Every structure is written in structure tokens, then in C-alpha cells.
Image 1 (cartoon, rainbow, N blue to C red):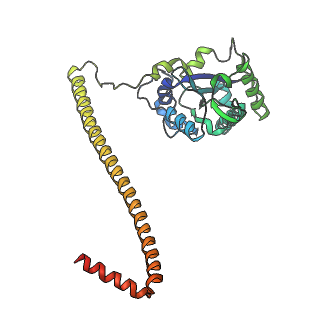
Image 2 (image 1 turned 135 degrees about the vertical axis):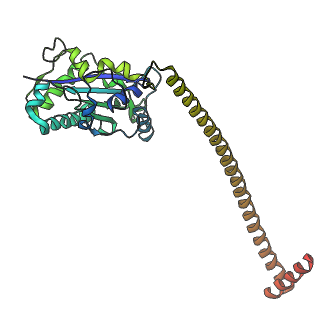
Image 3 (image 1 turned 180 degrees about the vertical axis):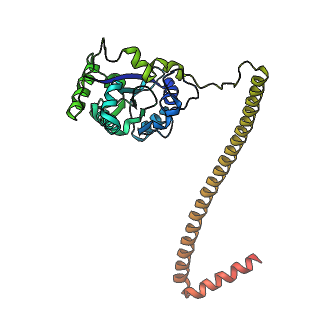
Length: 316
């Protein structure tokens, strides 16, 4: 019988660029020979990440006020690699294969009370020998702070708290999948005969992640053609210089906008001051009219007319 296979890998922020490019098939070259580019169109997503994984994490952190101190050595993302053997997927067919991965997605969203919003990406790869899915998520725990307030924080060590945390994952995953109609055995942590560790690394690209983590380098069509390489380098230098010019213009535009914003703010403050002064003068004049009316027994309209004539003569 086939096995329910789920493996976890933790990642730091510096590793996410390569992971993103590998999972989302953004690279030009792949060291994993089992990846067939002609089958890229067969891959599909159960959840699509509209930006890079690291940007998505920062957005989630801001929108959900996630706690947790993130430094260079912090594990900020986890990846479940989910599969079984090739014969299992051939036996159950395309529709059940889709249900298998959708059921797995539902399991991950609910496991440890994670929540679907903290899943960054769920990518099913059908372009290799054995179908498998990469689910990348932020290890968020729901806990309380020192004064008892409920908080959410990024804490990989707490998400995987306990020496048997991976065993619990295997137990829960196996139970969840079999209860939903998939005939599987529980995955073993050692000496797996149905799918060796080396084989798992091949079909998931795990062995090649270090290679994929490096930023994709521009590959010349003919590395032995020195003139072509020099021409490409010249193009890169010209493009870099253009970027520098555009960046300089952007800085100047930002400075101009900031200066105008400050001037506008000063004018607004000045306008508010004039409004307050005008209001004060109007109140003062009104009070003066009332006093003069009572002192000299003037009718108000007569007095205002005298004041207006005086003001006109004064201006002349």
C-alpha cells in the first residue's frame, strides 16, 4: 500500500527568493533533471502568491499586527512537501489527485489552528515523475502576551514545540487523509522503502534548493564566445547607468514634492491664523457697534454707514 508523505523544511528570509523561484518555476535553468519544462502548463496553484514570499510575509505582518522579533537567523516560513508514490496517483486518477492535494491544503490551514490566510502559496507540480505539492506558510501561533492579551506572532520554534512535533504531524496527517477516503499507510520517518529519501529529494527539488536559492544569473548563449559575453556586460553596464539616472531623477522629484508639501502645509497654517484673526476682528467690531449704539443712541444702520464712509475716506 502507498504511504501518506508529508515533510517540513524551515526557511530564513535570505532563503525565500530562491524558494519562490523554484516553486513558482521562475528560473531559466534547473539542476533537477526530472523537471520537464514541456509540462509546466500542467502545474497549478491552490493558493497563488501575488508577490515574493518575503514581501507577502511583511504584508501579513503589517496587516495582522504579528508579534515576534525577526532577525537574520529567524525561521520566518515553513514548507510542507506533500506526495505519495507514483503508482498511487496513477491508480486514483486526475480528479482524485486534485482532491488529495485540496484535502492536504485544508489540513494545513487547520493544523495547529494556523488559518488559511497565513498560507503564502500552495503549488502542485505535475511536471516531474511523481506529483507533489509545495505548501509555504508563516508559522504563526495564537497565544497571549505577558499581561494576558491575545496576540498572534511568528514563532517557528513554538509552532514546532516539543521533540515529537513532527511525529504528531505525521499522525494527524495520516488520520486526516484516511478519514476522507484515501487508502494510505502512515508515512515512516526512517527506512522508507516505498520512496527513498534520495528519491524524495529528487522529485521535490529538495536536494537542489541550495542551487535555486542563488539569484538567477544571466547565462550567455555561448559561454565560449568572449565577444558575446563582453557585449552582454556592456549592455548590463549601460542599463545600470540608465537606472542610476532614473533613480537620481526620482530622488529630485521626491525632494520637489516634499518641498511643495511643506509649503502647502505652511500656507494652510497661515490661512488658519488669518481665519482666526478675521473672526476675532468681526467679533470686536460687532461688540463696538453695540457699545456705540447705546452710548450715542445711534441707529445701527446709520452708525455702520458712518463707519463705512470713514473707511473709504481713510483708504483714499
